[in-house]
Amino acid sequence: MDLAFTLAGLAAVLGIAVLSNWQAGREWNGLRPRIIPWKFVLILSGFLAIVLIVHVVNLLGVETGPDQSPFSRIGR
Image 1 (cartoon, rainbow, N blue to C red):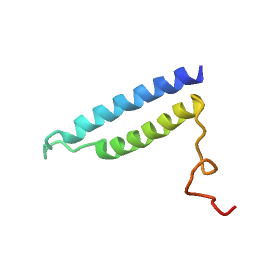
Image 2 (cartoon, rainbow, N blue to C red):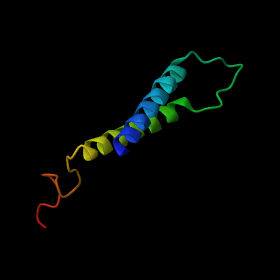
Image 3 (tube, rainbow, N blue to C red):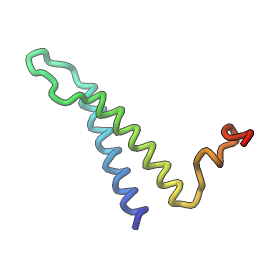
């Protein structure tokens, strides 16, 4: 059930990323101000997509984190 919710959230976040990319790339009209900061929404949705992808990988059984990394906590 967690995997289904995570994949649904990932699909929603990717949809928001596509919409915000399209809105941010449109030509600016000086008469109408932009109410929503689309570039910030794009960056935020990209970050959330990365977090959800890592969550899906963890749900599939791959352990991530600082204890599993070959580059951190070497001397501990």
